[in-house]
Every structure is written in structure tokens, then in C-alpha cells.
Length: 271
Image (cartoon, rainbow, N blue to C red; front, side, top):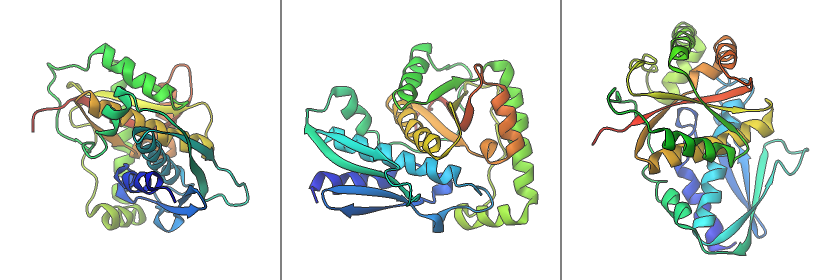
């Protein structure tokens, strides 16, 4: 097994995942890495269909791809290569050697810097339009879409998040999963709506396992790009965990597509 592949698997441990479950495992097969979903780390009540588990694995896949590109190799990826083994999500090998570009290295250096930032964003510091354009391009490069919610639509997002939060607080099985993996209930949603925060929806054309995997790769790409742009970011997965909340978010997207995750971003305050 080539050292670059092993290093890529190690770098993938830094990928974001639902409640930090890291629901994946890597296997070495010949001269390739295989990415498997780990159903034992799926959240059966929050994520009954495995959408967020697969999305989390997609983020790990993107991290591994980025690590290989930064090491000077073209990553060769087969997504969902074996229909008889649905937990096998991707196989990665090494393609041709090629020097890593400046933007690739800049993004790769953000792997250990990326973190969830739930602090309020100052209302006077708005995310520049050019930065939002760059974030959209990062999603499009992963065959996904990124919507920036209009100011008037944030109230509907708040309503969806509050409904999902209330359901989680009153569902004993969901509360137990949150306690097990997060150690506490989730914080109250959208406390700083109306501040300098922007709300981004990662969306796909369809809504199956292939789309969930792509959405995870896009989430990783957008979040790392946001980190490179010195933005703070945090996910709002609860608005896609509850069907009613997800339907409300879907109604805000024009043209309509399938919402997979919401990211809250803003100009990060100094540490």
C-alpha cells in the first residue's frame, strides 16, 4: 500500500460527521483504499435511512481525495463500485503524478483548522459576494448545488429548526442518541438570525445514496473553502433530519432541489 494512500486515510479522520460519529472505516485492498459506511455508528432514530451517515462518509472521501491531490497524485475514485455491497461507498487509487496547485495546498492546510463555530457573527461584517461565489463554485465542482437563503427566508428556516429542535427534545429515543453521541441536547437553533450569518443549503438534483455521498463531498469542499476564506461555519443537520422541516427548506429553493444539509457561515471573530 502506497504511503500517500495511508496518509490520506489518516487525514480523512479530520472530516466533519453527524454528531462526530465518524461512521466510516477504511480497508486496504491491493493498491487501493476502500471506504465503507459503518452501520454500527449510524443514528437509527435521527438518521433512519442513513442519509447523514452517507453524507458524513462523503466528507471523509473528499478529505482523502484532497490529501492525495496535495501529495501530488491524481486521485482515481470509483463511487459505489459494487451494488452487492451497499456499505462499500468508494474505492480510491493513485493516478498520475501531478504538482499540487496553490489553491489545492491552501485548502489542504485547512484540514486541521476547520471546526464548528457557533459563536454569534457581528452584524456589521457581512460575507462578501465574491466569497459566496467561491463557495458556490466549490459545491458545483462536486456536482452539487449551494443556495444562499434570502433574508426573508431565514424566518422560515428558523421555524423549521425550532420545530425539529422541539421534536428532538420530546422524543426519548432521539434524546438518548443526542446524549450518547453529543453528551447533551443541541443548543437552541438560530439564536443569531438577523446578524451577519448567512445560511447556505447544500442540495442535489435527486435524493438517493449517490446524491448523499456527493452532498458530503460538497459539504467538505464548501466548509474547507469557507475556512480558507476565514469564515466561521456550523452545520444545521436537524432541519434535514425531520421530514416536515426538510420539506419546508425544499420549498425555499428555486429552482427546487433536494436539501441535504444547511451550513451557517459568517465572518469569524478573532480567537
